[in-house]
Image (cartoon, rainbow, N blue to C red; front, side, top):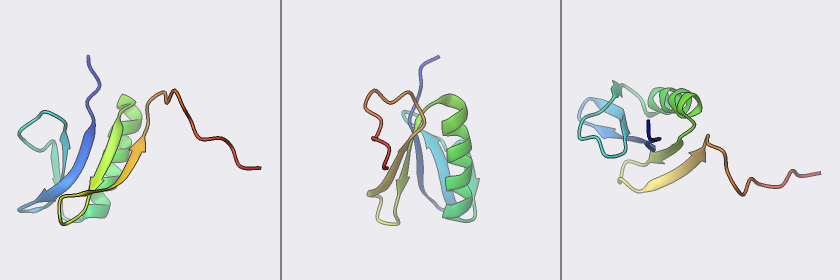
Length: 76
């Protein structure tokens, strides 16, 4: 199974999570916060990247839950 990025996007009924390449939403939520939480759970489970889009459709945040070849260095 190939890993698909997950996007949190606006939807006529609120906010939705969509897997990249799919035409339909996986789930629809009333608030962006609820959609972000669900996308994070799916991203962690499927080791995917999660893209949070703003009202304007532009990506405002990106979180990786996969094996990052260049993880950030720990702050000391």
